Length: 304
Image (spheres, rainbow, N blue to C red):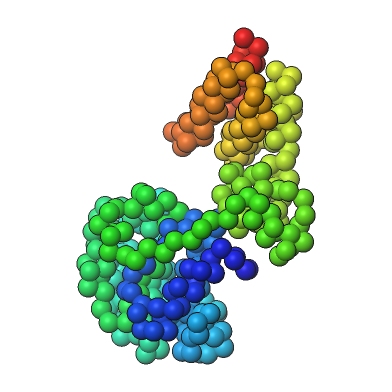
C-alpha cells in the first residue's frame, strides 16, 4: 500500500542507511492508522536487506524474502501482552538481541505501541537502548508518543512525518482506489487513512453511516430511533464517537448562530467524549438510557 506521506521519512532513513549514519534506535511517533507499523516494517526490511537502495529494500535478496515470508530469524516483534508490554517480554527480547545474527547482518527489533511499556519494562529496555551492541537496531512505534517515558524517547532518534489533511486523504483514496465520494468525515472515528480503508472493506463504514443517520434523526426528533436501540455492546464506542462528530459538524454549520448555544453544544460534545473515554469503567451501564439522556440534554440545550 502506497502511503505518500511516509515517503520523506523512509527516504531520510534510507539515506542514513546508505551512508553508514544509521542510528541504533528510532522512535516512530506515527499512529498505526496513518501507517506507523507499515513504516516500521519498511525500515526493518531495508535494514535487513542485503542490497538496499536509497528507496529501501531490494525485495529480492534472501534477507528480503525471509522478511516478506514473516520468518526472518534476526527480526523480532514485541507487542503488548494484554494492555501492557511486560518486563519479562523485554528481558526475553534483550537476550535475543545479544545473540549473533543468524544471517550475518543486523538484528532488528520492532516494538509496537511502545507507550504500553510498563515502568519495569521501560527500565529493562533502557540498558539495551544505552548499550545496544553492534549491528542492533530498535524501531519503537507509538500511537501516542507523549505517553512514553522521557528516558526512553530521549535515547531515540525521532522520525516525524507531516500527516495528510482530510483533502489529501480524499485525494489519496481517489488516486489509489478510485473512490470519489467523500468518506473522510469518519477519520476521527476510525483513527486514520489505513483504518478508513479497512472500514470501507469490512462493512464498518456502512455501519457508521447508519449511526450518523440515526443520531441526526434522534437529535432532531427528540426520540431514540430504532438503529440506536438495536446496537450491540461492541458498537457503543463507535456510536459515542459518531455522536461527537455529528455535534462538531453542527457547530461548523451554525458557527454564526447563537454563541451561547454553541458554547453549550461544545461542552456537551466534550461530555460525550468523556463518556467514551470512561467506557472501560462502565461495564454494567444501560447505554440505551445514556443515549436517551443525551438526546434529552441536547433538546434542552437547543430549545432553552
